Image (cartoon, rainbow, N blue to C red; front, side, top):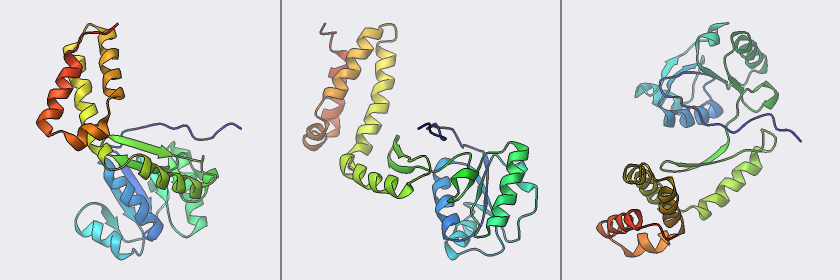
Length: 216
């Protein structure tokens, strides 16, 4: 069966994001967006305390009023999270006319994008989606992934990002040696390394991996 939604990573840095709605669902979406350096505007006549908290600390711009068509057209992405389906449909129509990507919560047929279940470990992100059809399943799988990728993966991810930079710098014109270096990193026992070595010893082990000659 063909899928509607393609997994893709996009930058939201400095992008204008509109959330219409001020309840619990809107709060969850805002909480997710706050991790991605976008400029968030929330429009709703009334909001829950958690959304008010974000506004008081200037994490978001809050406008306590009804939505006015076609103002969604002025934003980079839009989330319709009100409890009024007629309003959500109107916002959807405004976005489609303007070519603005929109997510109407809990209504996959009115979505240009969806929110997968996400597990973050520093720069490592694991996203699980059911194409909008069974999000409860994606949520359970995310819980399982928490045991597969425990907290130590934050440090592994940070080390891996720095390791890649060093490998590219050290073996700039030697693609075979780069592959060899990456394989050494991937085959290392990182659970033991992190558990038994000091930070200085880890750096020495990384240097050894990088400078070791090609074994082939």
